[in-house]
Image 1 (cartoon, helix red, strand yellow):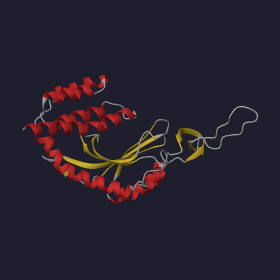
Image 2 (cartoon, helix red, strand yellow; image 1 turned 45 degrees about the vertical axis):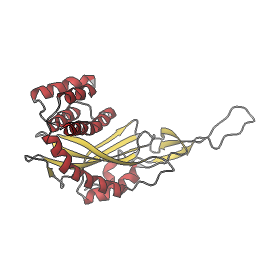
Image 3 (cartoon, helix red, strand yellow; image 1 turned 120 degrees about the horizontal axis):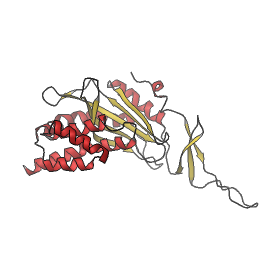
Image 4 (spheres, one colour; image 1 turned 90 degrees about the vertical axis):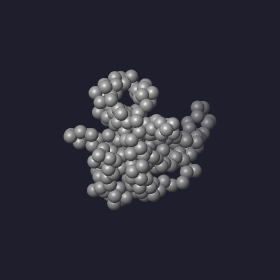
Amino acid sequence: MNTIGQFKDTTFPVKEVPAIGIPTGTKSKKIDSTGYKFIVREDTNEVISCMTDEYQLIKNEDVLEKAIPIINDRGGLLVEEKLFGSSSRTTWKWKFPEISVDIGGGDLVNPTVSISNSYDGSMEASAIAGAFRIVCSNGMIIGFLIGKNSVKHSIWSKNMDIEEIIGSVVNGVENILKTDFPKLRDTKVNKLHVAKLLKLFPENQMQSLFNKMISKPPRTYWDLLNAATWVATHQMKRDVEATHKFESKLYPLVNGFANQEIAKA
């Protein structure tokens, strides 16, 4: 059962502080409105970011308070909680073990939801659908990101309906698992696509993927996806934000490759 108390590292208090201009000269008056404001971490007085007045603050705590009830209702289990960029960006990830989809041969996958938020405007408040599966006996898991729903940090944006977004992505990913994943499993891989995927990996990880595919050559796009996500999970640094951004591109890319092959058939 998820509770707001377990997220102490990511629910630190924040506040908005107007950026007041102090002009030079003895007769000059202070400028009450500069069009900017600071986002400040209250427990440390650290300035997290400087944003325009059009930035809408969405607190991590508010996001979690809306998300946790529906995640608990669907049996969500927290698998990852990360802070990036001097506390300015946060990502949480849950899997839903009570929802399993057999994509063939007893290979079971579970839907997941990743929720992200930022205090520097670099990321929208978002919920991303995906899937997790256990890949080795120590419980290591790999993930595939599939769909996304989000809202911009803007005073002109509508409020983020976390309950609706999470419900829709969980239901949507379950349907996708039953349709897209068998397609990946049943489509023979094109070697040109293998080469393209290799080139996209960071240089220091390209050899890891190459070795993985040498030991077990991918016959289908499902095999190719597994090899790529294994490297992202086992070899790349999970505490580096770039890893998460790179990982999020793998499923759409490989799925696109498979669709190209199916279209040629």
